[in-house]
Length: 293
Image 1 (cartoon, rainbow, N blue to C red):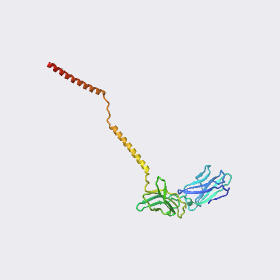
Image 2: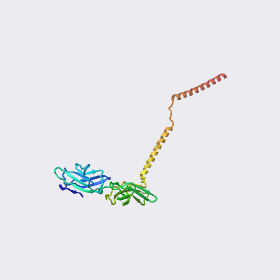
Image 3: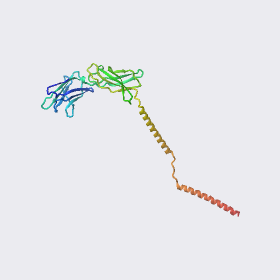
Image 4: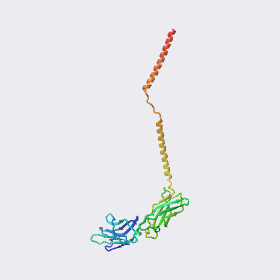
């Protein structure tokens, strides 16, 4: 809980909240005081321990009017001591209420998701071993400082877009969990998140890990498969018909153009030959008749 210094009541900031995420990033936000004049500007200073000096914000979050409503920090390290935050304001010729607050940084950390989630299933024993590594933090390295929530879902027919939650387990410690009654004919997904287990760790649940699927592969939709098969068969038939048509067209004899001069010459030769034969035979007959006479 923060407290306000001297000045006009209602001019100090309200709803001051800080969150540490991705190990070393921190965002602090606040609301403008309910009675603060329009030209009021706020400035944040902080230090992570008693031995350090106050540092001013270097990256303010601003509203549409340019008023400071938060600050972004990088390279934040969580210490065992209380961090000290101070927000004061400036306005020409008028004193504004200041705001102070001391916070244990580990309490405001949003834990990252557990790392390297993997599943190894054995069909003989009908069980799966789910393994992971602890979330990353800047101040806690012991596995025993974390406990986990595991959600295993049995994915249903993808065409129905529904899921039946099969098992949720909380307060799991260590780095692995045995999932019993595994059915190799079904498809599952698992996700994990972490929280404190008695150390200087936030008691709020952290980020969920990306779901990891295991078990039988998703079956192909029957209707989709039939449409795909039909399209392949149709395309194949069209392709083969085109090939057959092209082969027939290339193998058919090409008609040759007629040579009118060749045909006329041939017919003329045959006619002349026949006339010569007739003439020769006629001459022989006449000669024979003359000799008989």
